[in-house]
Length: 160
Length: 160
Length: 160
Length: 160
Image 1 (cartoon, rainbow over the protein chains, first blue to last red):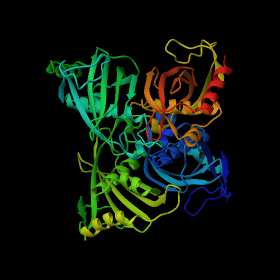
Image 2: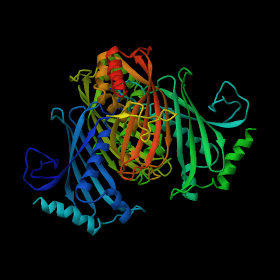
Image 3: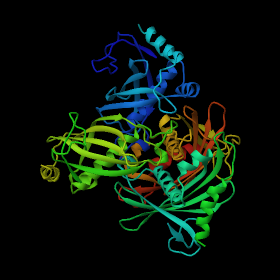
């Protein structure tokens, strides 16, 4: 996990402007045959799956597994919003890097920003954001437990 | 749900040999763009998803929802085996009929057989089977509760 | 396909304000077990698949199949942007209705808006939009062919 | 790619009996949240996707990309049969190793065998096989081109 130094107006990670100090996590996926469609490119819903891969790795890089958080706290991070801008189609066997950061953190919500680039040529494939709300099993709003707030906050402070 | 009168040696449903009297359920799916791959046909793993659509409808036709069974009994029907034979590729927007029956029922296991045909021309798309084992949440083997056994058994007797 | 009479500021279909006259298409899906995740609700990327189901049906209701358009013209409607706002989690076996309309149509782009409601209780599950750009097989921008423009335009005029 | 020294009667890879000399390829996947279902385990159709990940890597280890083979030859390896035996449920964030080998190679068909194990504890998750038939774009049977036969054959000879 490297430190992120800059961010665009839209809150997306911008590797070209390091400086502001939010942590950034990177994960890798290789496009699967299953993920292509008859257009010969990766089907658009799969980008949200790759965002999730980035999110999971972000948690791991912050020192906890999302799986353990669910088990320990009984809380879920429900997705409230998702947005993706598709720039260049990803194709079968493309090696992609998902760069993930938190661009907003409140007591009850987290907003992640993502950028997907292709390793072969550095081309930007997509950018996006997801907004998450903490919920109990019964669907009631909840606050992010102290322990996980600190893990994320330390990370954030580290970057300052 | 119509009565099934015959079955092939392999246990797959065989519409051409009616007679033995096991109940048969039919469900419909239309091939989604998401389900195609760059070969221009439905990706092979999706056939197992369609089998599940058939299985769910089979339960509904037997008078219960698999969802309610999970909730009421705390039991899961774990998949132990799956087999599919692909005959003719399904394509985007093909209307498919999944014909489902139970071809084996023991205290702790169920075996479903499936046949998928294309509505447009009646062509056989695929055949397959899945074997299921009853399990508790903790992963211990369990018996199919009386109520659900009866629902399935009545169905089976109906067909005699 | 019924006529849509109103639209919200954000361009999403709003069944409560009939009047402006854009056509609206409705399609049905039942949530599959495959579409749930360990949170016990439908996984968030599947909503984009359901949007596509709505889009396909919209074309059918306009008198053409997206499959035929691809074959006849050699053109693809590439997704450029996707947005989804998740309101109430959809669950296994929920019957959902996807209401789809075109909220923007230019020479080279189409924007669809979607609303997903649950049939059992009418609850709003999600809203969203997708922006599409016409492309040749080789990835060059293209214009929507006259024939398909008319099919969509007539539809739009019908609603006036 | 290491050499495989033994094989079970059923043709599945068996790491405990090295000796017969067919090449074996290994690939890694981490179970995604998207791949879980409401039972809290990986949904059964995803195992076929992981088999495909193993197959792709097998080709790469043999010196070619399946993507390039499709482009160069205009041929597809259509799936004719798939079988999976599920042993232990895979869970979110499990690290899995897919061990892949060819267990049968004729002029027009290939049969792959797979074994999936969990890295954390070495537990066997699943075993399976897929049978593939060479086809032209138009769906006519074809023979595996010389070049690719040799790439696979050399591999096979290497292991002798």
